[in-house]
Image 1 (spheres, each protein chain N blue to C red):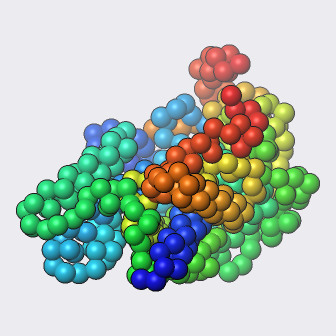
Image 2: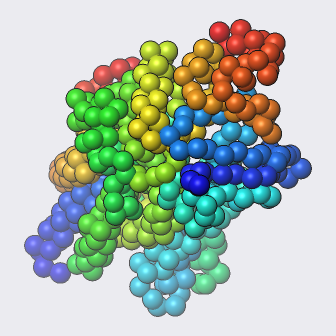
Image 3: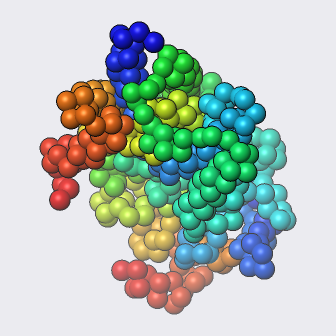
Amino acid sequence: MRVPPLVAQGLSVAYGNRVVLDDVSLTLEAGTLTALVGANGAGKSTLLHLLQGRLIPSAGMVACDGMPIQSCRDRVVLMPQRGRIDWSFPITVREFVALGAMGNSSFGCCDREAALQRVGLESLATRRLDALSGGQQQRALLARTLVQPSRVLLLDEPCAAIDPPSRGQLIALMRQLADAGQTLLVSNHDWGSALDLYDRVIVLDGRVVADGAPQQVRSMLGSNLAAQESFHE
Amino acid sequence: MSELDLWLVPLLMALLIGVLCPITGTLLVTQRRVLQANLISHAVLPGVAIAVAFGVDPAIGGVLSGLLGSLAAERMQRGQPAGQEAVINTVLAGFLGLGVLLIPVLNIRLDLEALLFGDLLIVDWSDLYRVLVAAAAMALLLLTRYRQLVFLGVDPEGAQASGLPVRGLQLVQALVTSMVIVSAMSAVGVILVIGLLCAPVLPGLWRVKSLRAAMLQSALVGLGLSAVGFLLAVPLNLPPGPLIGVVCMVLLCLPKLRPVNSV
């Protein structure tokens, strides 16, 4: 039997008296594209940090390929939110992407140039990072993530603050990666039709509210989800 | 001191710090840590006072004191996410106040004005050697840790997540910054040194494509600023240190050196 790349069981986290996550369990299968959907403060970023081993849960455990995450943190790579990056730093796209390989003796699924090509930025490689549009910057960040060797990619709101066409390109790119065997968990706010491009949707609100294929989650949440969609549209 | 040394040493000093301070400043500006440099420059005073009282080289006391101030501020910033600047400024005032108090308490003679504003015309070879030691430390840091410093500047959290020793790197950088500030102290003082750390970095920073190019450009600008300030001081019969500070500010007013979309 094949061991799933990432398994989380009974994860709980509290900041003081405030419970952020309560008994969250999930399993990610290889080569799947999963959306992690929830409102602000639902615990999405906290969960991603737990899954990458940056945060220690107050209860529960995370395993990668059957081993505790703390012993194999380099197998799970987290692409941070765009707000964490200083986009005005004097650096070219190529140099920025190459930073992803720092500290790793081997490249990830592709080297620097291949990663640039994969996200469609090879022609902009010599531009300054702040000369790119928001969508192109997100693709550069994804390329930096791709040069790190990993079993699982965790993407923290990659579609935030970018225009719809760029969002579509980015999701299509993530789809390609999943089809090529990569395992991706992508947090976002988007409750709209873009969810149909994912294999699976996990709805989080401090705990797992719904989990399944996009259509299945829609029918599970019913009118609640319709209200969210109309609000976001 | 020979007659040649009387003008050669100050000129060399002006040119050397004109290159070294902007290179240091480029790291600080791109990492948004200029306030930390300001803190270090003011926090050197207690260390200088104690060193003078115990007959130790004031530069050693200054470097240690500046580093201590930086570490103290970093420690106090934890748990104060909304008030980090306030913490730095409070520590800055505290260390400066402590330094001023130590002068009468330790019963030492210290020219506070020279310490704060410097006097380029009375520097000697020992001051020049201190700048060279600081320059060597900076060169070593850049040669061995350049890419790590780039990562730290563009994405500090990402740098930490990828396993870089971020805390250690920041500590070493604070130490080298302290060395640079203290070495420039005798020439331009702990207050005016901030002008040389920042002003040469800003023109064209929006245009260059690498940290290396930003450093090179700021070093050239700093060299020009120091030379202009020094050469203007002779005919105008004014102190070069403050004049360099003023020239730094005038530089920022030149419209062609600002980004195209700025007002």
